[in-house]
Length: 381
Ligand SMILES: *Cc1c(COP(=O)(O)O)cnc(C)c1O
Image (cartoon, rainbow, N blue to C red; front, top):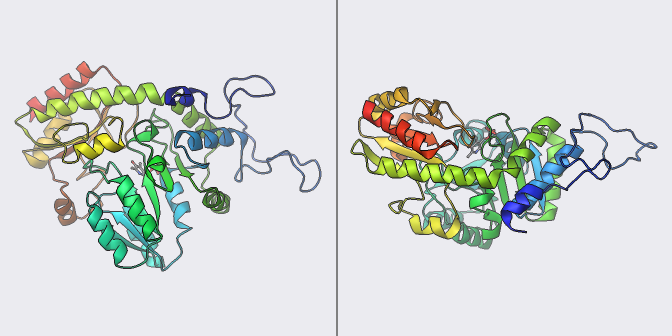
């Protein structure tokens, strides 16, 4: 089956008992046992639930892994993974990370002895130097990064990490498995905030891990039950429903992302556009090598700084001013005062997150309406 067909049929097929084409919602915390410690495969819904099983099978299949696990949020998935990184061990990570990931590493786990070395995600040599400097349990990557859309060469960094005995984890939230499949490029584990493109409708919070190694998958499943950050059956159902339409949605996001990025690139009020689908992206060759599309995330720097960004955002009529991304509706935000406000100003400046930076999540509306809306915003600057 080709990928789009798989998206529609993944997760286990019709219910064998009733023929229902969608998995039933098993709103049950516990399951009857036929005798003490004898059961029909389900005992208690923190450990497993049939609606969640359908989603977890689908997650494994679409990320081409051996074991899929669903969580109550993307950060719930990450926190559970970090339970497998004992105190005293080290993570090597790209230095442009989702703010909540940074918070969990630096403001929480650091006090319990986790150390994280941050490197330029675009530089394979920087990963090499960090790995040469001492042992590391994990290499943790986002590609494309948030909000500057930088890429990491997954084939090269995975090979390097494996030579140093480190496992590679990729947060694939921005690209989605439609456009990038890290496990096929050498990574060991994929993480998702299913809140974003997989759910796709801004109506739930969820997360996922997908492992290639069944033994590590089993260990993470043990931790999933031991820690307990699991999603309820309704949210599992909604993520699975989102996955059915991932193909058509991502192509619409991609079309709109391209249209908006090209418009921004031609504007004299814009000093930089960050979108890996543009020929002007500094890693355009790598983008085409490891991604088959680029989606709806576009960020750009306005020449007039924060004042210009505020004027731009105020003039928009279709893009909603809101955090988050990956839903059918277009969203716009100002990283310096919203999603990345927790990063200290000098650090933001050093990383290239200027006060005039605006991040757009282009939805699936008609691209002409989005182009008109962004044009309206630029005229107001
Ligand atoms: C949103 C997000 C997360 C965190 O996921 P939640 O579902 O909000 O907990 C992690 N990584 C990336 C890239 C995100 O965009």
